[in-house]
Image 1 (cartoon, rainbow over the protein chains, first blue to last red):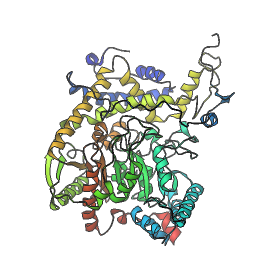
Image 2 (tube, helix red, strand yellow):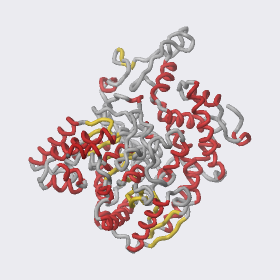
Image 3 (cartoon, rainbow over the protein chains, first blue to last red):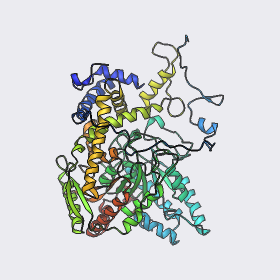
Length: 107
Length: 511
């Protein structure tokens, strides 16, 4: 990825968008890249305002209300049957989710 | 007769059901007929479950006839936003990616609706994965505002709001991540409530941004909202962020609404530049009414609210990009098989994933996923996502200070009345501004209610009045909302929706 935004100012190039779409596992067409890249630039420039007030001594908030982890007793409770869990699968084989090959052909 | 049934509030319909003056089958059929008559124009529904709704209605009629003790809303039909999982009923979240998906389980709030005997009429339209403020980002076409079919009913929950405004359902369920219950309420002349974060279970909601999402009631009156809120709210062990404490008395707060001595804070940052004159005028009048009724009106400042929109459009896309990673074409949902991989060989799982997400996601989903991926990538994380989380702290601090000076805060719900379909569709920033007044509540987790404040002079369209309360003090929304609604309805001689134009399709049917 390019240098830190502090020195360059916010902007997001067509190449950046193509790279990010790859990370997000979305194939974008050339036309989509032409369309989305300038829009995303405008959005990024606008949201970069958050840095104006985000001083180092402000703690971050990830969750609106204070919560602690919730545990339950380790007992079996009803869940989906295998048939229910597989009912919406695009492809099923031997009571399992059937997926395209994960590794390359040579592997 | 069926026209009368449609105009009843849920509370009044419930009374007639309990008194045996009307059956749930009759009430449900009346709403199904209304949907058949007007939904071609309004397009509030993605799916209508005629058979299922009538079967549930018949069952509740049977139970009532047998003398069983029933919930107060038993037999009152309801519409459910299509982001909420309904066992056996397709749930798409407005996306091609989930087209035809039939959940194998019910969301907790749906379990409660079914348990209380509310027939589910169908699933309502929405922006894809709840990303939008107009329903125009629905993969299945936009909904139309019953006040003017050329305009949007807001979003993302425009379908639920339009259904209630068009008298297709007395009650509906919405979800609100940045205003998706309240803003559609404002532009359709209906009531919408975003409960305190954790007040209503998120189990079974298709997640958009998990730290912001909250389900709540969409209704025509404040009392109806309280009735539905009490039914769906409360602790759920299946949602680890659910509040483990009793809910305050919401219904009682509406029935005994009294604002004497209550401190009402007008938020300076929500209401100046960018707010339509007619929206501001109706807001000022409502504040005046509260003051006349004995409330003490003070002005409060929340300086960091000016940064809320920017923080939201970093936090939401970040969480969304992570949540939507689950749509990988492997276990459920769409799977697109390209003929070959990029190297001409057999397509890999990753090739299938890329092709599926390219086809399945619409423009706005792609924009936000890419923005979130950017905000979370190394080298940018601190500057963007990290800074946004700090702004979130500052906004929570603003609320804390404001609630030290006022019991509730108020503002216009949305800066404008309903805008025209297509007007902002390809201008993301203009679209995002619709939620400028509703977003701070989601970032801080506090509850908010929108109710109609009247019609804007310049266009004759509904404007919304927003009430915000401290976390877990949802009862204050109902106390103030109930009091203001009573005064406004008094002035109008009925609900604002009584002034809505009669839909053409309905005119033809009755003629």
